[in-house]
Figure (cartoon, rainbow, N blue to C red):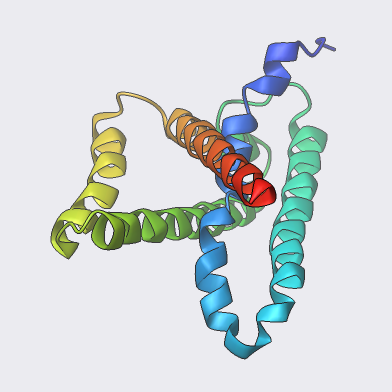
Length: 171
């Protein structure tokens, strides 16, 4: 059994933050709730809680199946153990990463078009092109991309939300 180092616990946080990054969806969710706006708190708790529980269960499944020999892409480790487990994990992974990308990409596109008054075609390109270029050139791995994106986006957004909260509290 290998010992777990502090760096092993810190490195995955960018990926985790990317997967759970839902703050950008709150304004759209409130628009959708309309007259039921009072249910927003429950929706946020449920919308963050359910995925968090699923990710914990997935993590336990990975550790229970692969032990400490987990490759950077855990799904490839599943492929070595059982093809069916790989297919289930791959389906789950595609769904979760796609929905995270759609949420973040939509918010970023709206920021470009609404806040920065960029043309829609340019905003769409600015959102879609970087992941495609990084994916095709393989300059960095997919895990590194979402890890960096999660750490940077969540960190910056967390600071901004905290500063807004502080300012509102003082007003």
